[in-house]
Length: 111
Length: 112
Image (cartoon, rainbow over all chains, first blue to last red; front, top):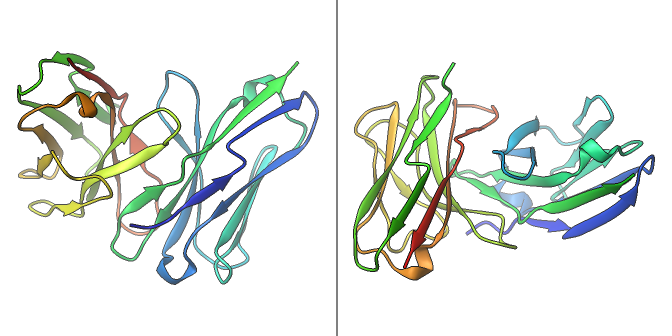
């Protein structure tokens, strides 16, 4: 069983604040690291798939970095908006080709 | 585009009954996954498949069986349902290499 951990578990921020979350994973079993956004009553949707150490990806106000040697990834949201409220999941694509998710960070952006 | 379709969307079972959940994808994806979502526990991997005719166990496989007889379909079976299997079940599929997963809309199963 791959241990994928996310922190914090939940987060409340004010509109306009920037925020970040952490995903940690076993670096010895790394193949790719995924980030997903999951809104209530919907299905998860992919944000990024990252494979290379030092990788940085960006989509609008959301960006992510990856450190495969130490086994962590950060997701950043700049200038949070109420529509950013969702659960953010990371998932490790391991060497056995499984896709193992962390328990998620629940973000609430207060207007 | 249908993407990933799960059948049924809702189901109530009595303890001991059996049922099969169907996941169908029309994207010619190789990999398919079944997850269960429980409060505070994110998505936990039940079983997965890396191609037609192959299956593998995930984190929480006990009480479930799967089959992938056709590439586009991944079936999840509960032989004798238990209240502990009350959950929301999600299916996902992805192509090989480093590509994103696409999810179905979920199946809400209640075992009474």
